[in-house]
Length: 83
Image 1 (cartoon, rainbow, N blue to C red):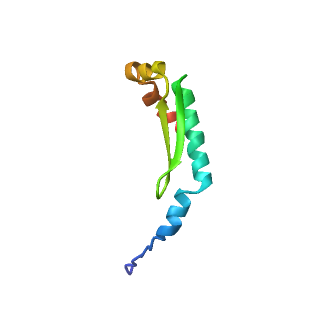
Image 2: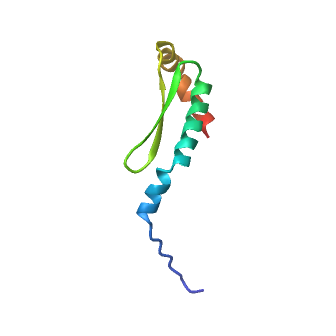
């Protein structure tokens, strides 16, 4: 059997367009909301765009939420809710 080589050429502009698309941002927002809800009260989601992709952050917005993360790892345990 003859060896075949496959060449893949990445369309960088297309990848950036995909990663910054509004639908990707919306999906990240939904995933972040599920994680925040699973973590409990006081966690909030921020979705923003970098130069080449959309990113989401779930953070402890209240003192109680910070304590829940520090003592019980509430946010760390809730990460699977975003899958």
